[in-house]
Image (cartoon, rainbow, N blue to C red; front, side):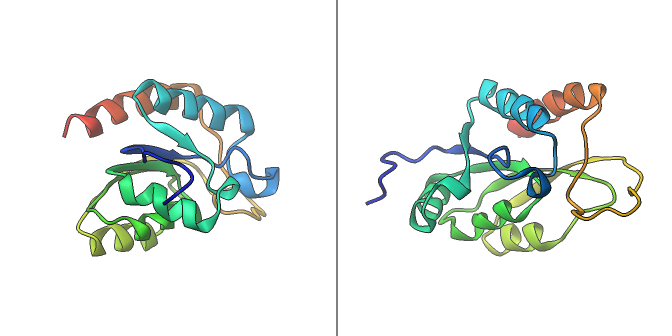
Amino acid sequence: NSSLGNWPSKVYLSRSALSDDRRGLPTSQEKDIENIFSSFGFTVIHPQRLSLYDQAAVMQGAERIAGCIGTQLHLSAFSGNPVEMFRISPSYFTTETDKNIVKMIGGNVTDLTLNRATPEGIRNKTGFEMQEGDFTVLKESIEEWLSK
């Protein structure tokens, strides 16, 4: 009974609508990532713009979930199916939480871990920037992930 109607099977959980201090990536880079995932047939979802009910409903239909590391990926717990997750993260901040959630529901996680030095005085550990070559690696990694 979600107001969203048909649920997408491939979802990119974006952080671009979050405030600068909570987003992680610069807005332009998050938008670039959104465009890349859209080109692979993913529906871009901004969880914070949906009710919790609709967030859970989106996850019910999702077979593939992607996003940059952050709490939005925890929504996979609402999936009624084993999901395939694709996470983008800097090497200095990876967490097992998402992997544990996905493992509990019978799914798998594929990581694209970008080698980054830990910034000094970092407030938001999920904050990082993509480098030019990272976007090429991202596209190749998505293609490989989708071919499995």
